[in-house]
Image 1 (cartoon, rainbow, N blue to C red):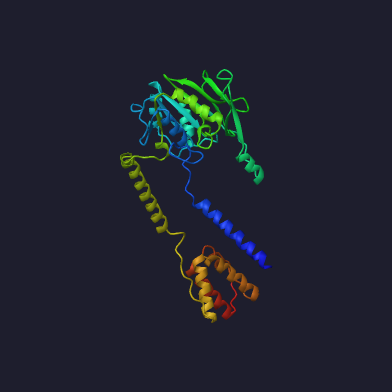
Image 2 (image 1 turned 90 degrees about the vertical axis):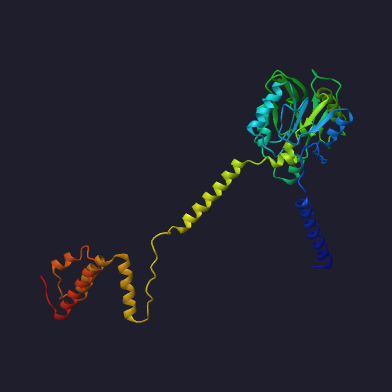
Length: 363
């Protein structure tokens, strides 16, 4: 191997190691959070709303409809799964006339997005198509984009909105207004009435930091801003923003008690399983010496443990008669072999030994 090949190999290994370190060591993205400066974040959209005079609130507590005025922005994906109480608060917020901006992920929905969409009356359907396995085709699939066109009933002048290719189909309960359609003609951005309030559904990528530089995406933000009102609340609690008092009171004593009880039960079951005998008690076999006496003692101990006395007695009579045809064992002694125990076996063996010594013939 040449010196140049060695140097190229070392450079390649160092490059792979450095790439892995960057990938594994980088902090996970915050997703479409209003605090995230990443390409998927909504920091630029929040700053734009503040610059245009909106009173923006970042929720760091569980959502409370009595304290939120105006519009509530919920972006997905998010790590926190809503509870039944959270979903009930969302229904009450809409019943009071609030506006919910549901920014869906456009990918197969996670638990949080699925539960929230069901609460809002939305139906998200994801195809069962798997991504391609070829690296080149997968990269093209993962980076594919599409343009959302304004519905003619909404506007004929607004430019197209650029987003990542939508992997899902989102449908409302009907009777709403379609603002933009995807390349298949299906509604992508729309609004509808829910209770006394309304729901606006749109892809989260449409207003992300990496998309707002496009003309159509910026126009979409300005269009939606006019319908948001003066007060806008971002649900950042779902993205991990937690106030100290909410974190201190967020634990559940009953859940902790249940966890402790489960651990105690698991410990008890483990101790019980380990304390149980795994089968019959083991008896150490006698150490067999090299002499015939030791071998016979060991063989006898093995037969005793296995309960072979009756079979051994019958085998003893058959072997004696085969080796000494002049010796005939009587029927009484034969019947005694049936069900013989160790003591009876020894008695039968002694009688046969005496018969062999005297060449006695039994009938």
